[in-house]
Amino acid sequence: MSDFFEKVYEVVKLIPPGRVTSYGAIAKYLGAGGAARMVGWAMNAAHSHADYVPAHRVVNRNGLLTGKHHFDTPDAMQELLENEGVKVINDQIIDFKTHFWDPMKELQD
Image (cartoon, rainbow, N blue to C red; front, side, top):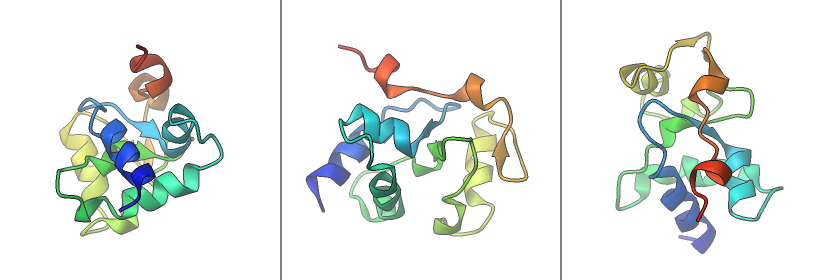
């Protein structure tokens, strides 16, 4: 597993329940602003990580559940988010800005 993937997983593990972030926000926080797609690849492989990685909390920059097809069932990502109080309609997070967790702001030293 790449060092970059491990860094992504460490950030994702810090996202609180009921909050979401984007692939790009994680990439930017890690100093790799153009690597949103690589963060997506890390989320795709998260199920094989030794520790639990709440990949359902990572969505695209518009709040769409673009990674839902990588879960066990097509509705699993939405169900996990809704269990945390995040409302989703047609794969779109409702009140995305309210639920958005920005690692650049939240993880300041």
